[in-house]
Amino acid sequence: MTGLRETGATELDVAARVVELVHEVAGPTAEAEVTVVRHDLALTRFANSFIHQNVAESQVTVRLRVHVDGRTAAGGGSLVDPDGLRALVGRTLAAARLCPPDPAWPGLTPPSAVRSNGLLDEATAYAEPAARAERVRAFVDAVGGLEAAGYCRTSYRSGAFANSAGQAAQGRTTEAAMDGIARTAGADGVARLCAGRLDEVDGSVLGVRAAAKARAAADPVELPPGRYEVVLEPAAVADLLQNLAWYGFNGKRHVEGQSFARPGTAQFDPAVTLVDDPTYGGAMPFDLEGTPRAALTLVEAGTTRAVAHDRRSAAGAGTASTGHGAPGGATFGPIPRNLRMAGAGPATAGGGPGGGAAGPGSGGGPVAGAVADADTAALVAPMARGLLVSDFWYTRVLDPKSLVITGLTRNGVWLVEDGVPVRAVRNFRFTEAYPRALGPGAVLGLGRRPVRQPDRLDGGWWEGPPLRLASWNFTGGASG
Image 1 (tube, rainbow, N blue to C red):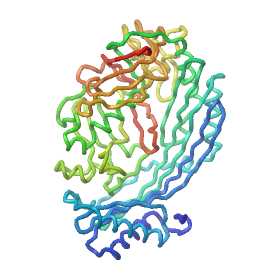
Image 2: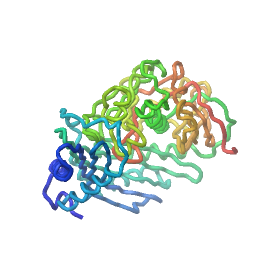
Image 3: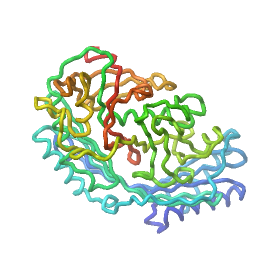
Image 4: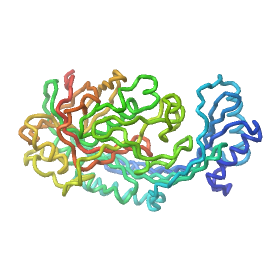
C-alpha cells in the first residue's frame, strides 16, 4: 500500500490532484469533491485486570464524489500514488454513468473560510503505549482487587478537502478516551470519559468510581415496574442525547416528516439547552462536503431552534447546510455527533468528571458508593422516593416520530428514599418517549457540570450532566 509518507504529499495535495484528474478524464464541467483523511488510532485493551492487547493503525482514506451529466456517484480508496488515484477516479466515474439521474443534486460548497478549532495536542497525537498503560495500571490499582476490564484509546486525525468550485480546507484534531468496568461476583460498575487530551484522563479517578459503583450494586432486590422519579447519571444521559441526535435533530428525517422536532416550539423543559459543537473537541473543522463547522444550538432554554443539515437535506428544507455532511449521510441523514447538554452552572466543589467526594445524600451504609460525585448527590438529596440509574444499553426505537425507546438499565440501579440510596435494585426494561421525559415541567434538576462520554467510534461524543426527571416508565423487571 502506498501512503502519504511514501509520496511526500500532503492531504491537500492529494485532494487537489484528484479534482484535477476528474477534469482530465470527464471534462471541465464535471463536479467533484474530495476528502482526504489520515487517521492514527491506538487502543490498549485490558481484561481480568491485565492488558491483553495493544493495537495501533494508521490509514489514509480518500473519498470522492462526482456529479457528471446529471448523475451522482461516490467512491473511496486508500492508495494515494498516481495509479491508485487514477483508479479511484475511473471507477467512480464509471459508477456515475450507471446511476439514475439525480435531480436533487444540491451542488458544491462554494469557497468559504474554515477556521481551525485549535485543539491539536501533540502528546495525545503521538502517545506511546506506555502512556495508555499507565492509565490502565492506575485504573486496575484503584479498583482495590476487583476484576477490571476496558480500554484506553488515543486518536489523531489530519485531513483536507478540495472541490471543483474552489473550496479548500485543512484541519487536525486529537481525542483520548477511557472506558472501564470494575466487577464483583454479582455486579459491575462503570466509569467513562472522553477528552481532547490524554492528560485529562485519570485512570485512578475512574477506577475509584467504577469500584464504588460495583460494590454498591451488590445483592440487588427486585422492584415492580411502573413510573418512578429518576436521577440519570451522565452515561445514561448520553443515550438520550445519542437517540435525540439520530432520530430527532436529523435534517433528512425532519424533511421527510419522521422527526418530532418542531423548530420554534417549546418542546422541552426550560432547563434544557442542547448544542452540537464539533469545534469543542474531537472533530474536524469542516464536514465531508467542505462546509465549515460551527456550534449549532438545537434547543435553547426548552425551545427547539434547529435541526442538523447537510447540503442535500438543506436544499430540501430551503435552508443552508449546518456542516453535518458525513459518510452514509444519503442513507442515514445528517447526525449531530458532538451533542452537549449545558449544565446548570459552575462546577460544584469536589464534583466534575471522574469523581470527587460523594457529598450529601450518599448515606453511609453499604450502598454509599452509589453516588459517586457531588453533582449527582445534589440531585439525589431532594428525592422522597425514586431511582438512581447509572447507564442504559440495548436501546431500540419503537416509534421514530415520537421517539419512543425501549431498552435496559445496566451497571447499577438504586432505590432512593428520603434523599439516600438505600438498596441496589435489579435491572429494569423501560419504554419511554425521550422528548416527553425531557418535556416542559419534567426536568426537576440538572447537574452543574457535564461529563463527556465517548462514542463507540472515536470522533463523536455525548456530553451531559446528571439529570433529575419527574418520571421514567419502567415496563418490566428482572423477572419479565
